Length: 218
Image (cartoon, rainbow, N blue to C red; front, side, top):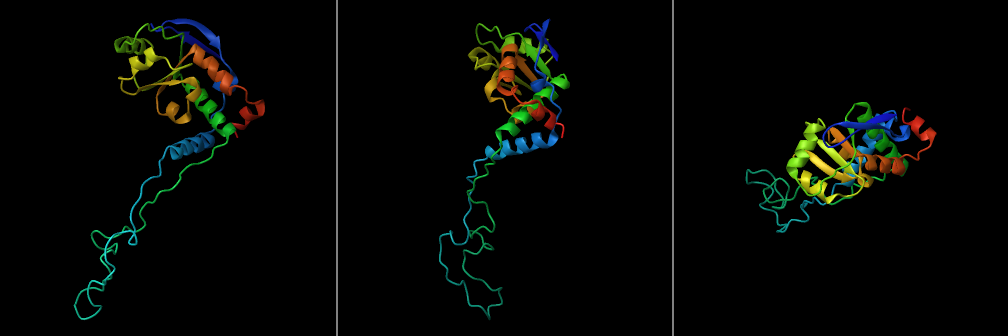
């Protein structure tokens, strides 16, 4: 398939041919959802912790005799029913990590890239020719390209001038192509990639077999 290439002034300079194995894959909602949930789970620290009645410091002495006081039966002050007592069924440190097969991650990434391309939310930029960091220049470029909401800017490698120009803009994030992931792409309305980043994406994820691409529609 062909995709137009723009310069930072918003003018279309040419069209390029991109790999159908990366940018024209049928959307597989189940795979994308599973990978997205797995990535969110892997980002969790799992360090939340609470004390049970056995962990709370204090005496285990029965507060008052069982009968004859008129009060409800009570054990120690470490009971979860009392202020300062233990927590019932509270969180404890655990590992939330989910192992996701490499082919599944790659297929999900190809699916979301293809969805962005099909919906017209993928724009290919010739290059970022910023000689120095300028937030104003970044704003002007995004406006010229028709970016009026959140956007993920993808470059072939970390570009300091681009990163510094975009870091103070709300809902704008920059990433190198090799660390693109499903969650970041789906979290932004627009995907803005340089031509070099597109070629890198094709090299990284465009080697899937024809059968894998067909499986995306199952």
